[in-house]
Image (cartoon, rainbow, N blue to C red; front, side, top):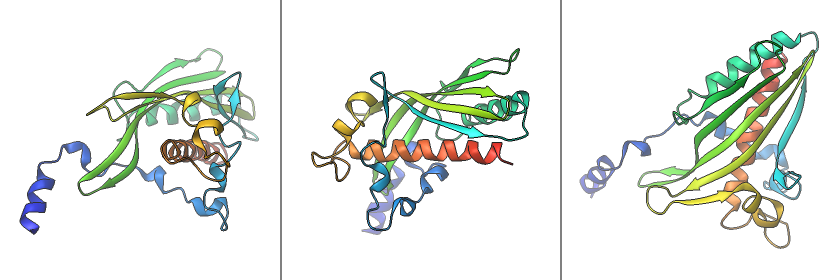
Length: 204
C-alpha cells in the first residue's frame, strides 16, 4: 500500500509541492477566542462605490516622502518575485519624480488546502496602490478577482459578487458561507499580512 501511495504522489504535478506561504500563518486566534471567525464577519470586506476596497493609512513619523517611497517600492517589487507569484506580477507605476505613488499588479496562488493528493487553490488577481506623503502612506488593495480550478474547469469570480457580506457570509451573517467563505477568509488573511508587513517596515 505504501508503494502505491508513493507512486501516486510521484505522479503529481510539480505545483503540488509545498510553496512558500509563510503569510498564511496569520493566526485567527487574535480575532477572538469565543469565535475564531470574528474577523471575517460583517464589515470585513468594505465596498466603496460598489467595488471591494481594502485600505489602511500607516503613520511613519520622521520619515520623508522619499524614504517611504523607497521602502514601499522595494518591498512591492520584492513581492512580485516571491514563490507564489506568476510572472505577470509587476510594478505598473512608480512616480520617481514626485515620490507620491507606487502601483503594482499581482497574480498569485491563494492556497486553501495543500495535503498529500489534495491541492485546492485559486489564482488571485489584485492591485496594490501606495499613496505617499511625508510621514505616512495610504495603502489600498483593490481590483480583486479569482480564477478557480483553472487546471480542470476554469471559473472566474469577481470579489464584488463573491466575497462581500452579501455573498461571502451565511444568511444570518454569523459565519463565512460554505462555498465562497474560503475565498473571503484567505483574501482577508492575505490583506492583513501585506498591510502588517508594510506597517512593520515603515515603523522601523
